[in-house]
Image 1 (cartoon, rainbow, N blue to C red):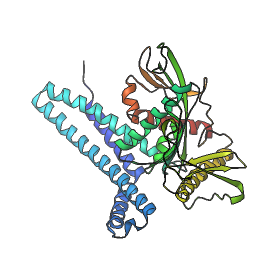
Image 2: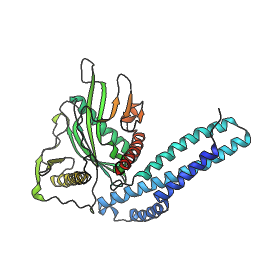
Image 3: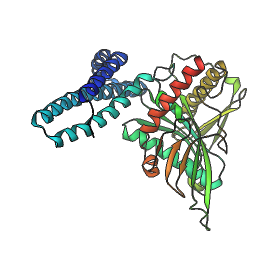
Image 4: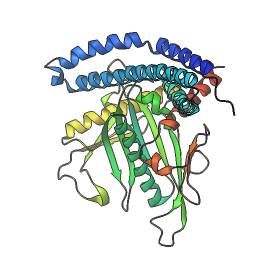
Length: 372
């Protein structure tokens, strides 16, 4: 069997890398990295923690993107040298090694190319994720907790910060709901395709007869607001309730009414925050979440469909976007993109990049089809 046309494949990779360099504006990124580096070196950086988090997060993201771009360019140059060496020596083993590396580089370049598709209005923002258990009883609550762990593990693998705003535990096991932020540039654009209903099929660990159980959980993804976003919420439109934080099984976490629940009366939007120590801090964090959700609602209504930014997901039969099947076979499959893997354990451990890249491409295709 004839091997690949290395000259043609390498030329195509170089052309794609040139396009990526222009679209991402790598030179401008390097300039911004130098500026952010000076800000990080300032002794008073952490006097303003919110700004410090933004600056360090932006620097980490840009540096990672530039490093990834440079490393891929170096690998393509090394591949050229490896092919030339194999040809000159007539070494089939070296050419076979080059073929394997070519496949790996093509996959890596495709992954970086996806980054150029994140050009939506809010794609560059950090992400606010809400998860709630749906149909399926205790299995659904356990599934919701597994999904939260999955996203947190994904963030940790990429060195992204995670801030938990609220976790409402179910009585027997798992979570009724949770809300948390992933602090990384382009987190919203990367994760927005995760919004929807997720479906789990497995032998229930909570069924003493060992029967197969189907359960559901809903995921909502909205962009974190910045100070330039205009979303005014009059005080008279908000009802504030305070209560004591609770842990798994109703266990008391504190003995003061520090947890805060905000209800936006006109829309019925409810958010809670219980993870800070003071009522004032929890109220401020809850307001951040509430404004993000109200902005998502506003933009969705302007676009005349509720799944534009946040989605209207019921977490039940008929509207699932991804299946996690653990029995009678093992597969995780996205029903919109067709992307699937046969290792659910790895997915639940945070191996989501393949699904996210496929989701970004799918979303861009859907946006183009809608525009036309």
